[in-house]
Each structure stands twice: as C-alpha cells, then as structure tokens.
Length: 614
Figure (tube, one colour):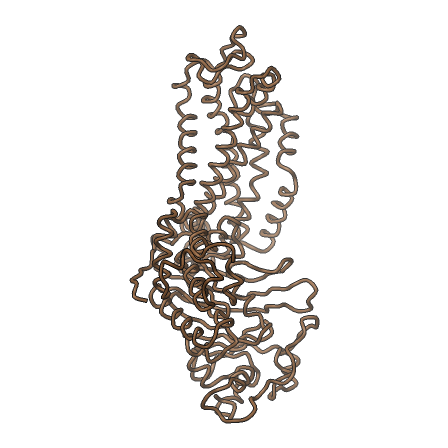
C-alpha cells in the first residue's frame, strides 16, 4: 500500500483523443473535407470530359486511378464527387439539427399539451421510413439534391428532437436555471444562452453520426438513379455508372467510390461517438459539483408483478462519500445500484431519474452509456471468481477495457495496472497469473484494481465481501476506505451486514420491499433508529459483547411481488402497526432533532427513547 497514486482528472476528457482509431478517423474526415473544399482547384482533369477511345483504361501516369466506361478520369470524379457527396448530408444535418433542437426545447420547456403534440408528431415521422419518403418526394419534384435532402432531414429530425428534449428536461431542474428565472430571464434567453451551450456537445455528437448515415442514404438514392443529375460527380452516381465497368471486368471505377463511402461513414460515426462520451465539466458549471450519483423517484416495474420492484427510491452519493445501502436479500439493493449503469432486467418499465455526475443515465444513447460504463462508474461484484474470465490472464482482465475503449495504449494501461495492483497490496507478478492461481482475497483485490482502471467518479461495491473469510473481509473493507480517501471517489456499498455498514459508511439507506424506509448519518441511525425495520435488523445482528442466547428474529416474510401493496410494506411484521399502516404508505419525515435523519413510518415517534433503541 506504499504506492503513491493521484487521481487523473484529464482521463475522461482525453479518452476521446488518445485512441489511435479516433485519430485516424479524425484525419480521414479532415482529408475528405479538404478534398471537397479544394477539389475544383486540384483535380487533374475535367471530371466530365468523355474519351470513349480510352474507356475502362487502367491506372496510368495521366490517370492514376484509371477511367470509367465513358473515359472520364476516376480520380477527378472522386475528388469533385466529395463536394457533392458531403454537401447533401450537410444540408440534412443542418436542417434536422436546427429544427430538432427547436422542437425538443419547446416540448421540454413548455410540457403539457405542446409536449404531447410535438412528441406524437415526431413519433409519426419516426414510423415512416426515410428512404421511402425520399423516393416519394423525388417522384413528385424530380431529381436533384433538394428533394432527397428535405426528405431525409425530416426523417432524421426526431432523433435530434427526442435527444434534445431529454437533455433539456435534465438541465431545467438544475439550480442555475432557477437562478436565471428568478432574475427575470425569459424562457428563450435561458434555453438559447444557458441550456443550449451545456447540451450542445451531445447534440453535435449525434449530428455527426447522422451525417454519416445521411451520406450513405444519399449515395444509395444516387445509385438508384434518384439523386443528383447524371453528369454531376457524386460517389453514389459513380457506383451506379461503374456497373458497366464491372460487367467488362474493370471494377476499379465502382469499387473506389464504395471504399470512400464506407470509410467516410465509419470515420464520421467514430468521431461523433467519441465526442458524445461523457467528459469532465469545464467552465462556469464546474463549481456546481453535482453528486456522483443522484437517484430521484426511481420506480421499476417488471412483467408479471403486481407492484413495483423499486418504488420511489431517492438516493444520493457525493464525491468522496461512502454510502451504505442495507436490507434483507430481495429488498432491491442490487437492482438500485445496477440502475446507475442501466443494467436493468429485460422488459423493465422505469420511471424517475438516475443521474451520474449530473447526467441522466436513463436518457442516454448507447454511445454515452458505454462511456459512463467504461470510465465514470465502476462496479465490484459479490463473487470475484464469477466476475473474471478464468481462461484469461489477470493482466488481460485489468487492461482490456481501457485499451478497447481507447482510453489508454497497451503500455500505458499495463503501467497503470501495476500501479493499482501495488495500491491494493499486490505486485506486478500477478499480471501473468490466471484467476485460479490466486486466492479469493487476492482476486477481490484484483477486481477492485480493475474497477479503478478507468479512474471512475463512482465506485459501487455489491456485497464485495460475501465470498471472503473474516480476515479477507477486513482487509477489503480497509482497502476500499483507503482508496476512497486517496482518489476522492464516491462509494456506494451494498450489504446486508449492518456492522459492516457502520464501520465503513458516512450515511446509510435502509431498504425494505423496494422502498427506502430510513436514511441518515451512520452513527446516528445505528444508535437511535427511527423505523421498526431498522431496529429489528439491529436486534438480530450478533455481537461479541451482546447477551447470550438466541438472536431476535423478524417474524413473517417480505411482501409478495405478485400481490398489490397499498400501505406500509413492513406492516405485517411490525409490532407497532395499526390500521393506518395498512391503508396508507408512510412518507419520509425528519427526526425532531436531526434534519438529516429521515424515516418513512407512521409511528417513528414510538421508537424515540424506547427499548428498541440500539
């Protein structure tokens, strides 16, 4: 534990720029754009100059890429075709982005009937295939760029508007928006001058990806003869014209534009996906310091259940804070923690928000979610042997994720792995070993080191000591506490062991039947519980200094998910239950002397100073 490690604040921001694949794709995008801009001045020949006597000639000094079936220079048509091939997608993206932002902002800000009308309208457009819409419009207005660009812009508009709406809904509840409203700023001013700059990187990333898809769609229309006019250089039209060359055994004039289309689409998608990954906030909003995890009103319902598995869960974890989530098996602890990674069961209906470092995980697209899982949030599971591939070396397990996502090169990743292994009390020799060659305690240390490889802002430990002996448990708990102090990482510790929770946590949430029944500072909650369930858990916990005899047990069973629940979930097992407990679910209320200690119980006052107090 002697290694000196520091938090790497630039890792998330640089993740997009350190990847060799990203740099190659960014370079390719730059070259294609330059070709489109400079093509009229750099083409070696007139792209429409016909030389039938030289048709289908191969590469030569005069024609480095050969000529097509009409004797036109392939290189000149490729370079000038870049201009037409990029101009169409640019029009699609500009129109769909501007209109999508306006519609998404209006729907999110005004809500109500306007939100319903705009959302249903975009869903109708969503249901209509973009290519079919383009073909219909072209059949009416004829060939050219205007008709297909208009049609595809309408088809792509819902992607931008729905993304914008979800982002604005998350932003408008931020304190800075309320501050500007109090100062008298209009809705338009707040949206355009304050909210838009905060959501712009994500929207632009989506637009970059849309650009690649629009390029492919327009090329497909040109290939069908429905795009640009026949004499206009265009990659899709070149593939269409190259069919004759393929039939005569000269496929180069058709293959080259296909290669350019594929490489350009892939390059734009990679660049856009990288830009969309979460990064550390900079500028004026940096001082806001949102919680690393902020769950509000989370409700999860599964098919075949009569009540929610999670019912209105509120939970926060701040940077550098350890929060324990305790309760019986089946209470919903693991599902709550997994929601931060959106690892929810198939068919789950979800309500509420789950924000990680200020961003709603439930509203993220696939690219941003992968970024969160790769670097912002990490998880340590119960059984380390079940979390590691037994056929791969430990070194591969540690470095694979950060190298595949482009966060680090292999050399840098290996050096980072060695640093973290030293931080968890192991040495570099472990890298060459297989999981079956180390003990359970060592393997759990490896899993913790792997969780820290991406420098996460939030670390979730789902009962990480369950599969370990008592000595290894103590070592892992001490290790997690030390690493939390060193890295400033927020830690959500899921356990059913109250003594363990008391030893490591700053605050505790007690969960029962998918609901948070009590929360407060660890020391206060365990010394003076305000909910009968918490008191019963404490009474059933074995202690070395406790009285001899049988442990107290909580009678009865948790409520069945197949039956609806109207009142307090714990009423059937509670010694203080009355008629009101069966009729109405209790709300959270603060203790008279502790505003940070809450319990959801109709009779929490009966526990104050009673024999139930621990």
